Amino acid sequence: MSSVKSPQVARSTIVDTWQWLWPDVLMRILPLGIIPFLYIAVFHLPLAFLGLTLHEWPQQLVIGLLVGIAMTVFAVLYRMLVVGPWFRWPTPGDHALQGFFYLFINGPVEELFFRGFLLAVVTQWTGWIGWGLLVSFGSYTLYHRLGKWNWRSVGGVGLAGLVFSFLYVAQPEPRSLLTVVIVHGLTTWGFLSLGDEVMYRVWKRRQAR
Image (cartoon, rainbow, N blue to C red; front, side):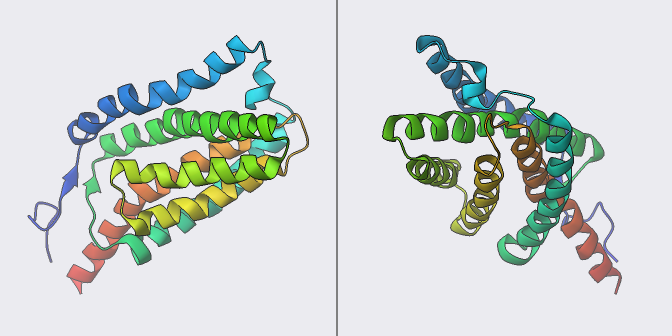
C-alpha cells in the first residue's frame, strides 16, 4: 500500500493554490466584477438589473442548497469518469482556501457577469431573452478555454452552464442570483477540489487491494 508520502501522490497546498489564485483575481475576477457595476452606473440602472436582489431569499437558499448538492455529486463523477484520471490531493488548508474562493468569490463574480450582466444586457439590446441566453451561455462555456482547459472539462462546464442558466431565467422577475451563485460555487468546488479528494480516496483503496 502506498503511503500519502508516495511520489505517486501529488499534493496541492495553500502555497500551490495561492500561486495561481492571486493572478487570477487580478486578471479575471476584478474585471468581471467591475464591468457590470460600471454599466449600471453609466446607464443609471438599479442593482436588481444585475440580479442583485434577495427576492424570496429563503426559497432561493433552499433550492440553491438542494440543487447545489446534486450538482456537486455530478461534478465529482464527471471529474472522475470523464476528465480523470490525474489528480492532486489537497491538504486540509488548501481545501478550505479553494472552497472559500469558489463559493464566495469565483462563483458570485462569474454569475454576476455572465447571468446577471451579459444575459440582461444582450436581452435588453435585442429584445429577446433567447439571444441573452445564447450569448451568455456560449461565452461562459468557451471562455474557459482561455484558461487552457481541455475540451472534456469545457464540456462539463457547458452542462453545468445549462443548469445555471435555467435556474436563473426560470425565476419570476425580479430574478435573483442567490440560487445560481450557490449552485455554481458548489459545482466548481466539487469539480476542482472535492473531486481530487474523492479520486485520492479511490486510488488509496485500490492500492490497498
